[in-house]
Length: 389
Image 1 (tube, one colour):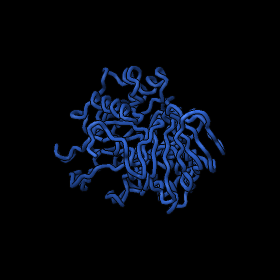
Image 2: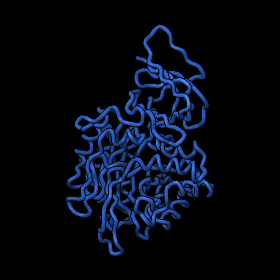
Image 3: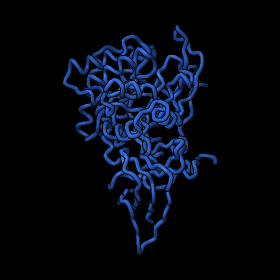
Image 4: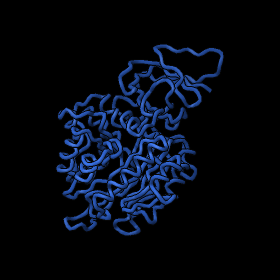
């Protein structure tokens, strides 16, 4: 059956004004000021008064759970389907963090396939904090080439007391493997670098960019707003041509007292004249948010919350006065462009029907993933296989 959305104020992410949109077989078939369908069965949904925006692409999620830095009882649970959809997320990139032992790569791949079967679009990074990093086939390059879901390696820890403390050569070799694997497989080939609080900061990545022929597009440092010093470095990194990933759940409001609130980080990046197409934001959803004292001892733990994506998007626009399209692109088009997700990140004819309606308070009303209505009246209506509801 066809679905026709009427009278939606479309941000694609650019402002298209009020449009009608026709969905067929999970794809956007037509967009126009006025669409009428005759002779076939069609579901008509009136979106008057609503903004229609692309579904969020969350490029850093612990879909099999994370954590464990405070002992086995601090391992976080897996992400359920509705955990993503209720937060406006339609595309997921899963990964492992500190624990590359009990969180296996095979389990990560299986979870990505499960989420895909349940209605999302799901990918994975191979690896974890440690170097050499765990793989499925025996090499990072082979994983990227032979496993359809694998888009790169990560999250590889840099400037963090939980890393393997590798030297520059090992970091460089990982990026080189990922770049060539991506080229051969027709994928973006990205290394997701977990940035810690260490004073080396982004220096290993700068060194790779300056001393090799590898471009910035193969390296994505994340958690770059975790403290003011690192964020200052990240601003210059973008000015030099690099790409950065802000973490929406790393905020003073959520217990990270030294962090730069993501919406404020977006405002500063705009004010500094940075190329905003080089700025992304992810949630770190379902990873632990460990708190450490000055000696590196764990003193508490929380869980990364994907709802922080919408919160920081809203605050960037309403509190910081950022342009709506610029802020929205950080969660949609910018991610799709860097990750080479050609059918994602925009509302356009031929793209996947991944989008949502929000009201003027930035509250999610409806969400479609590949043309299927997953959330209605702000609540999930499609659930994972074993979710209780």
